[in-house]
Image (cartoon, rainbow, N blue to C red; front, side, top):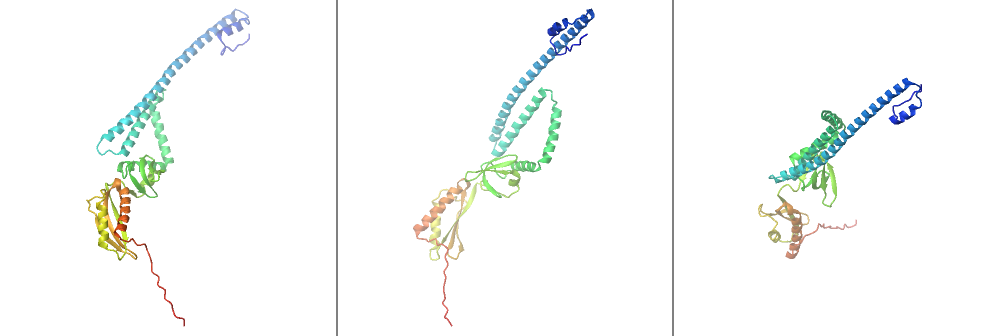
Length: 313
């Protein structure tokens, strides 16, 4: 009897094809049994595929909805944490940004684990895999981990904050943001600068904005023939007429040097940090104009050369 592969054929087609090849009653019974088994298998396959489609369709839809809701909640949590920290007394902008970002990433991590669990992935195995991956990445990126450690130290010790103007080693600028890996600066000439946290923390840091007041020494050289008392009175009038010069600490005027070409007169004053730069520039300008008006000279370096003629022998 002819052998037929009925595994991948439609039941009706199988019946039409094999009907012509029936040789006897036994063949008819065998064909009927095969057809019944094939129909039962097809029905079971359709039912299984349908169940899987329904099951994973709902899983995919649920995962998408979970991601959307998770991203929304993560954003709201970040805003709430940031606003809560900013409402506290002496809130730090840098710390507020960092903690709010950590809260957002923590929510997103939980959401991703929940999405994977929708598809039957075991969360325990995910955590174990993340731990092993973290160890491997940590060994491969030791320098990056140093930046992370330095970033955490900078965030908690806070030698500077966002908006401060600092100088640390080979770079300086206004701090825009302190991240886990690097610190962002904006230079005075409008350039963007990114510095690794390990280099920032490993260099001496000079913060020009942290303290409320700064000192300024206004030093001017006058000629040896000029009146020192008149020069000091002129400088006193300059600082008395400037409202940004503080009276406490009190300004201090003195003669600081007797140079080769000039007598150095200095006025030491204190100014509030936010207005330090424009005030010092204005004081320098006012001093030049006032000295010219008072007839006080500001000599430039000069040298007298005396020539002696020797008689020929």
